[in-house]
Amino acid sequence: MTVETKMNRPGPLKAEGSWSNVFSYHTMDIEVAKSEGIYFYDVNGNKYIDASGGPMAFTLPHGDKRMKEAISKQMENFTHVHPTLSNKPQADYCSKLAEVTPKNLNTSYLVCGGSEAVETAIKAARQYHLASGNPSKHKVISNYGSYHGMTLATQGLSGNPGYQRHFGEMLTKWPHIHQYSDHDKPDGMSREEWGLKCAERLEKMIYFEGPKTVSAYIATPQGCGSDYAAVAPKEYWQRIREICDRYDVLLIADEVVTGFGRTGKWFAMEHFDVEADIMTVAKGITGCYVPMGAVVVSDRVNEPFKSGAAYFVHGFTNGGHPLGCAAATKALEIYQEDNLIDNSNKMGNYLHSFKEELLDRPCIKDVRGWGLMMCLEVVASKESGEYFESSKGAEGVFQSIALKNGLAFYSTLYGARREPIFKRGLPLMISPPISINKNQIDDLMHRLYESLDEWQEEMGVC
Ligand SMILES: Cc1ncc(COP(=O)(O)O)c(C=O)c1O
Image (cartoon, rainbow, N blue to C red; front, side):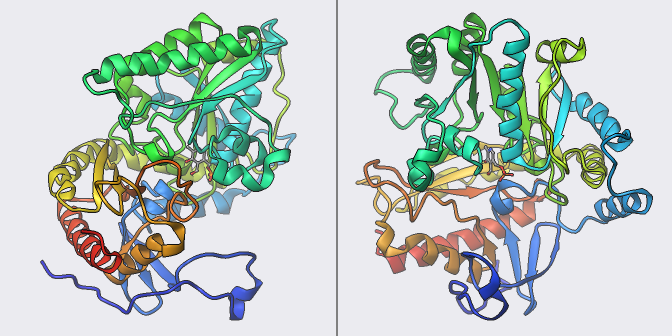
């Protein structure tokens, strides 16, 4: 197979011309003119495969006419609703969403993105406990290495000192535990046994913080940071569920990345037969056609709000925006009509069939994930298991080689800024729109192999 698109290697964008008015913009010097299916086109007509679905976000095909029509139609009717009037598109969408969410997760609060969804979730948990006669429950436990957003509250939850460094004094110091990882599993121990051991960390943290003070535990189903796309055994999540129940701690599944088919099921927690009490979603909810997010609460959490015992003290001007609701409703229809969740599962299996070939390369230490979410752990040397020092600019070099070969990857943010104390590689995510077909995966892999070979040679990986 030949690579159709070859261009000069793009470099980092300089803050010149109209870009000089954009605050702190970091990107490559490529201007997108159009997007369609799994592809972007730049102003010079070069074509790029959207290899990581933007920031693991674009689940739907780009440029889908059905989305454009649904959003335009809503625009012709009305674009916003006065807060004292009812917003029917919101009610209709919440009903439709409840048809695909897990059994007990039936009631949604609509927001404008993932960070807002996470903040909303921890406030809903707090108010649930207040209304249930547990006023001291307010702490939220989260994972080290996790990412839950960029607002101050969500950054406090995110267990990544790289992001927290500049804002330390401004952040809430939430307790963190280590997430499940295959990386530090003791030799000879099964994944199941290790999963149960890892889950014990939650119980210990609840004990030491004081069960009466702990409101919720928030985690992504797919790991995060160095452990992106780590799939824990079912036993891990089932034990986490038991521990949360034992101490009346709400389990919040942050499905901002994994929701809407990314892992081959509607929502990733379904793989473990575990239901959260609260689920946060964004990204795939509209495939990013319109900014949108949602917090879905279980019937139990909804009860005091439904009965009138509690009133949720919260709200955003653009939460439940009618254009967002029109886009999200159409997105759900497209997922169903085009069998995209099933496609993610089937194409995911096909993508993962390249695992051994990928592992043959000196720069790939691990390949993991599920559905159309594959993480390559890229290293400078398999022996050391480490990535390059940030001064080598290895991630930028890879980005620019990949773009030249027609592949757009998301810069993971874990590269240049990563802490050197952990002997881990750089997570490189392959998570294209879930409408991708077999030939397109072949094309993506061909370009990826070519890019990895060039990068290995340039960086001296052998
Ligand atoms: C797991 C998770 N939660 C929350 C967020 C924040 O979402 P947003 O960027 O839409 O605010 C992200 C963003 O990548 C995420 O990966």
